[in-house]
Length: 397
Ligand SMILES: Nc1ncnc2c1ncn2[C@@H]1O[C@H](COP(=O)(O)OP(=O)(O)O)[C@@H](O)[C@H]1O
Ligand SMILES: [Mg+2]
Image (cartoon, rainbow, N blue to C red):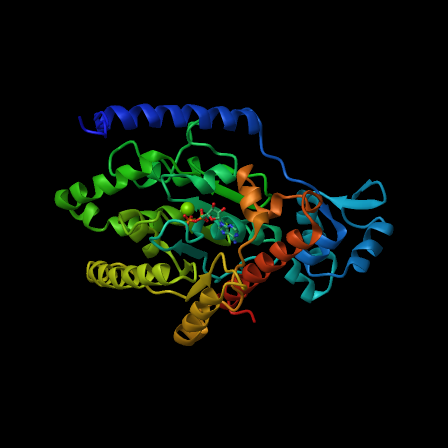
């Protein structure tokens, strides 16, 4: 007799359907425990030091204001003063309106003639840090006084989940409602949702977004509307152009019609890349494919001019010698186009992710001080660098 008993075979569909259903059930249970569907996301208060940092004033300046009873009055908790994010927003307007002409910088929004900035965060590799980057960039821009719209284009909806919109539990709208080809199309204003960050709205994602990938080839056969699929998002954005300064798009990890539509709407592109050989190889393939497809849609009339394109190194480990070498290699090739600050790998981000939060939502007291401060300092440096590019596109230095 054979010493090995052969394993019983099984049907693939039965197996994965059963396991998929079980995992989904258990995940929902976990989510319900951590974040009941009725719960609305709130935002923690901000310390005087944080408010001063995001406003660009000194803490002693702030102190003088509230001691004189000027502007919004912070709450006292123990021996500390705290502002809500709404008060931070009020404070900006107070400073801009009561200060001299340069005080306008406290509300750094678009002026007449400044173009809406639309930033697409792309790379077709999952796990390259697109969602983490898009989330923190959008929130940072809102904390520094910009009116921001974050758009989740990934049917997996991670950016939505980080903002309290969970596709499995909620009936979220998505951009599909606005760019679909049939008569069920809705105005973009109807699908925009608020977030817990003042100044930041979101268009959530859901699985239905994937339909755009199937509808578009059919629409292309049917006529000119389909052939110009890439204009649908940019056109929809015109309806809410006045309401925002910056749009941040979290693209799906694939080079499909959704990504091409986002890239055509974009005024700038941020490519996230983890500094490892396989990731860099995959990125070079992505660039070549993207370049060729872009040539094709350009011939069909797509406007693909950009104000800037940058590479952001993500999950960087400075102790990892091969990563340091890879970073050097990339810097030597990409020079100007690679952001000066690489985003370091930090447990603060992975920890925050477990409860569907960003670094900006975390309370410093939940971490060892060094861990939190290093993470937030690095994230702020990345985001202030991108903000500089946005302001430069508006002609400010
Ligand atoms: N700087 C970082 N430090 C630690 N973990 C990170 C960092 N950036 C991203 N991650 C984690 O890596 C995973 C993939 O990141 P994500 O932003 O979702 O990538 P993508 O959207 O490209 O698939 C997530 O679990 C995220 O929490
Ligand atoms: Mg993602």
